[in-house]
Amino acid sequence: MKRLKKILIVDGYNVINAWEELKELADEKLEYAREKLNYQISEYAQYSGYHTIIVYDAYKVKDSRAREEKIKNLEIVFTKENETADTYIERYLTQLGPKKFLDITVATDDLSEQQVVIGKGGNRISTRQLYIEVSNINTKIEEKVQKTKVNKKNSLSEFLSEDIAELLEDMRKQELQ
Image (tube, rainbow, N blue to C red; front, side, top):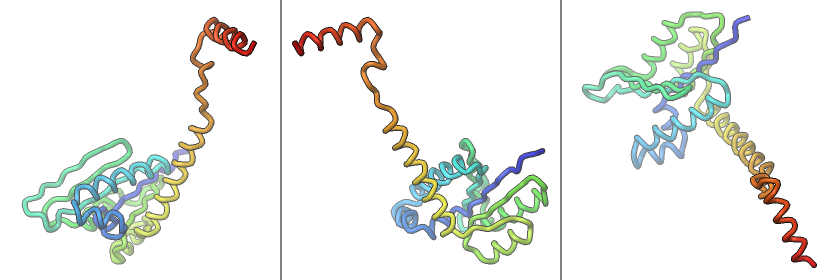
């Protein structure tokens, strides 16, 4: 039986403007906010099994050309001049069509876009819901890292040959006498 492929499409600027931390970063420098979102969504996607596309629109950027970048399980799309993220997402969903083995979720707060997504057979998630899911996964990842650190003692005996370990043990015993 064919496995369900999970695809998450994120309206990048919609999320940046909705997540307080990213919004503050964007006020300082938009590129920083994009990089942070890309990193957070990449971690989330890797942990949750999504193939993810983050769409940044160039709607108001003069002479912008469409471009795509791929980093592991993450595609980053910059739309061409006068193309919104919504337009790109709708076209992408139309091109995919109704496929039996696809589970497509779109993250946006744009209500009209959410309706289009549902109409094309996709699922929608609000930016707030996505934030909660990303935060929960980050917590799980951090717990795993901490658990790994605790379980890993790094004792000297793990790195010493048997001869050296015996020599050190003899020295320790002599010191105690």
